[in-house]
Length: 129
Image (cartoon, rainbow, N blue to C red; front, side, top):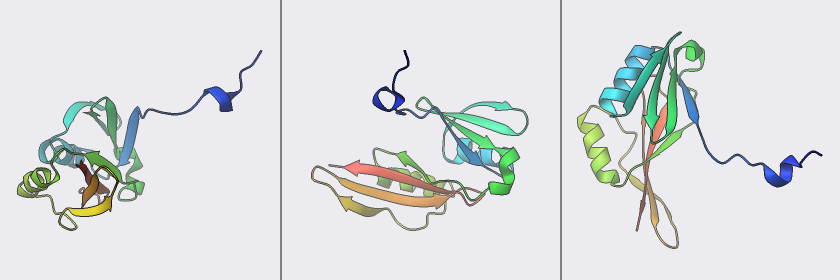
């Protein structure tokens, strides 16, 4: 007897996110040294992997033709102002100062945006009480 997929199955956890990059070594230095992400390993051909709290980030050199056209990844930070200041000191060029996105019933959503060396858009987000 087969089970109905619609009633039981649902995607709920991300295991890995791929970001296309034109130069994997340059991208690894940026994500590891500038952003402070925990580097895991290299894998041929031209892949670099990071651990983001149990979700792997894969920098994808073979997908270089799509570099700069990835989806926006939003990284949650506890203190947006401190993260903004730290990354700015490391040379990250933000598109604007951190700003309020929405006032929710129990918190405010703040964000700041910047780009990696391949022009992929990255966001920092913080939910402030």
